[in-house]
Length: 232
Image (cartoon, rainbow, N blue to C red; front, side, top):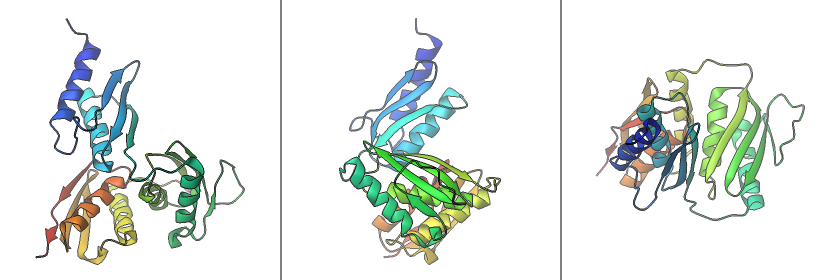
């Protein structure tokens, strides 16, 4: 006879197995319950990581889980090289022109600052920024840097803001505009209950996939509905 914990773990694994964006054969996910529900393993892309966490929350009905899933890196970099690349990417972003970016866990006196730490592909973002959109954009930029396997976003927002669907849509529009592979003026994003729907058109399937990935990179998104048209 199985226990309630074993039943929960088996139910989560069964739900992961039937999701078309999660490939458990090529990228196995380990699910354990030891005081908390824990997801471990490498996944193919950001969609699989975000959906696996969301599925585990829905099936378990727990308020939180330990998400230790890591993206399979497109490029392997040592910690210093990855840290330098992320610091440079953040420092060069025009939206962060008033934000100091540091390659250390220091706590400077600046009103707005970001400190980047890296260990074995795991990226830690600490600091203080002026809006939720800045907080989300910093995480997305860190994800975009090749070699990033997981992002731990500890950035604070000062003054504090209420998180809303409109704020998520604003952040997605900002991210789409920053993606050099896309023509953001042709894409509309609407959010309802943290579910994003994309309308508009792109020029090929690769752009379509990138637009969807960009939405999933934004923390706080629970689902993405792709209604984009591909121009022939």
